[in-house]
Length: 335
Image (cartoon, rainbow, N blue to C red; front, side):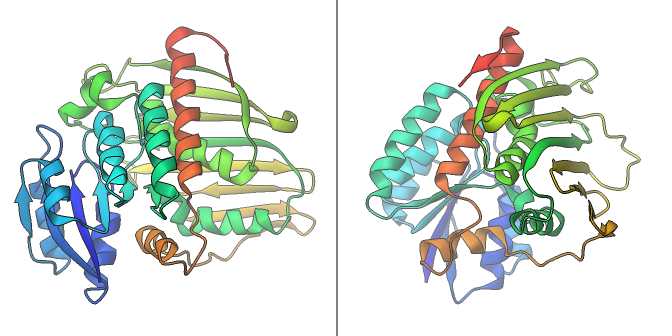
């Protein structure tokens, strides 16, 4: 039985709640804490109840909670600017961390977190970020096909992440707490580029704008990032909050991966994967991926090699923060 504590309720905490609720023999939620100021923890409490989990003890201070409860796993989902500090505190105590992305909003905080993790990892402590789209059937299916070599050597990737803006919580209204649209929204598409290609980034340039952001403070509504990668692989991602409210889905997630033997296209809003290769145009049958939190815990238990590692979590965050820096400064950032 693994004891779990939750810190915050700002993002994808539900990906852990649903798994915990489905496996009462495997998990118990001992306590929760808002973690960051102004976080509405009632969203988490409601989700726990909906999944058949009794509302646990609530702490005002997450540090006190971790010290007294001594959980096996901490689900970190506070304000984005607080992720690194919260995660580092838990890791230093020997607690496994399942953290909302981005895992840090500054390069300095990221380096501190990586240092703490390196020490914890030597004691068998695990860390991963909540990059939920890797576990969408369409992205999972496309990844498995690419791994089988159906499009040959990857030469170019084009990713898209588009959301409805709506009225966002105060967290999103200022860079200090939000960290930027590239690290929050763009990290999905940037992760796909890194994941599918298996390449490191050599340099990045980016542009962004806060215009037409629906009155959400300084939140960037549009951004484009261009990457030069190892072996002259090129990639670009476009990111926006311009998806119409009338659209059938909240997000419009896409990636096109062009290789020497063919092209794969993922259209997430349609739940479709298309392969264009020797046999012409084919729609691939979707595979069933594991559930992200269950995959994380199975990795802790040594049952699987999870789809997301700590190193990938840190590197994708670094790439996003350097892309954000490129957009902020108008410079080409060299890695």
